[in-house]
Image (cartoon, rainbow, N blue to C red; front, side, top):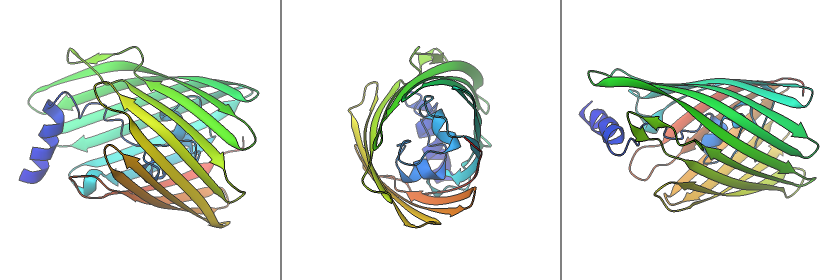
Length: 261
């Protein structure tokens, strides 16, 4: 308990690093270090609102292997003609700290180009300290060809504040290339205000029709992600782990159901 409390409050009170940590919304993104184009899921739109992959997905994890830090996600996405919609909720629970984020994204598809906006309502409560909420906006672009998909997103582009402090602004560029009918590779750069660029690379390979392997590496900070995806008709079950430089592994599991596009 002492270890958990120390870690938690180190995140809480050092430059608001625990507020809107840009946590991954599913097991697949845990495996790919936040790259969203290499395996499109209903939750992908929460990272880049230009993405809409129709379906329902629920995910759960204990952050850094700490049972005192459960993190839950639920996302649903659907299309209506040229428009795509995402509704999601992320909840980080601790008896001393709660964070709840509601996502509502809308995107428009024009041939090979997509543009999207995401509205997020962040509510945060620190026990015996104070609570606050904030409205955050994200924007995203996506362009795709036969073998290449490129995306760019900006999270909190209006520079919203929380407890009179500006929340972090994240920039993410990613390009995914289809190497073959069974394999993909994706590279990306992520930038947060006040920090250096973080380089990411991920790969996926379909061993069988029902099994996909995901691997990734992130530089600055160094992190490795590995995951397996079991495809059972329209149901997708994903399990992944990801390293952290100073903390234990984060184990993640997701269950999704694909809707007709």
